[in-house]
Amino acid sequence: MSAQITIPWAKPDFWGNEERYVLEALRSSWISHGPFVDRLQAQFESHCGIAHAVATSNGTTALHLAYIALGLRPGDEIVVPGFAFMAAANIALHVGAVPVFADVDPDTWCLTAAAVARKLSPRTRAIVPVHTYGNICDMDSINRLAAEKGIPVIEDAAEAFGSTYRGAPAGTMSLLGTFSLHATKTVTTGEGGMVVTADAGLAEKMRLYCSHGVKRLRYWHEVAGHNFRMTNMQAAIGCAQIEKLEQIAAARRRMFATYAAHLGDTPGVTMQRFAPEVDAIPWVVAVRLGPAAFPQGRDAVMARMAAAGIETRPGFYTPTRMTHLYSATEIPVSDQVSDSVIALPSFASLTEEQIARVCRELRSAHR
Image (cartoon, rainbow, N blue to C red; front, side, top):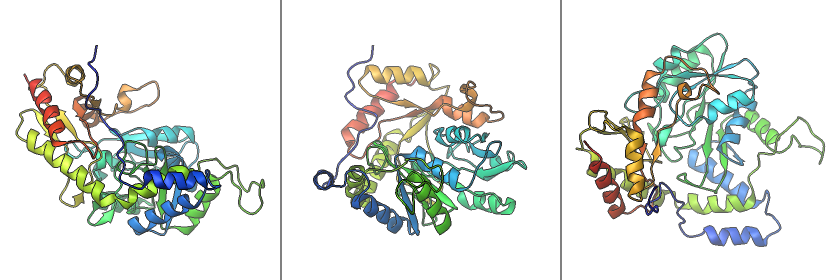
């Protein structure tokens, strides 16, 4: 049985104005859509340097809106990474499309253009690179391949808000970008999401589908829409959070650097690599455990950490491990990364003493 958890894997941190803004929203007559939603969308537009941001109820509905905006249909193929959180694949299934899994880079754990190219077919209608753990995929190569083939790209930046690639914010380098504002994320609304685009037509279509398909007349449905809206109280938290993004980013970078200082020379422990062109705000600090150094396996190491009161998470399970849902072939790197990655406690207020303790426990599992 696990000991009482004294260092959680994640926790939300609050930075000053969250309570005041939530009370302001609560005391107003706007607890569903309201001024804080508009304000948060404007903050995203400003931060991302992009014309349109559409707030949603979570990062998964943000992806769903993006798929609707592109008109994806049953039988369409959507290329997604084999190692990542599976929201992009799951929503493909919900719209009747076929998720096609491409392998990832063994060092960055992100989708590559070469892997995508091997999975393209005449039925490919979208490519969805996922910026895993706050890293960013090689977007120049992916966008170049997509442009050559005439295939739109949706950046799943759920885990990478604030990270940049050659100075461009995550989520802004392609036709559409989506974000999650879940409680564990860099900036949170508890549950929530955002879609960004420079395309006014796509933005208008997403706003329509986001709110029941109602536009000109109340209760008159232009299309069979959804209710993917964010509440004013959720947005109030997000407005307070994004005001402190620089402070949050500094804390998360310090967290990653402290882990690197403690683990960088540990045999059999490999940290995720960020390319020189990526300025990452790490969402999660995760490491790969080498089989020679940790022959007991990742799951046994996690159990040992839990017994010491430290919560960890496994790497994302790949589609080859979930054959009841997905069909996937030829993603050996994704499988290897998935089986060997352990995600360590990662949140902005994690102290140096806590990180040192996590690293001591991890090293103590070394054989």
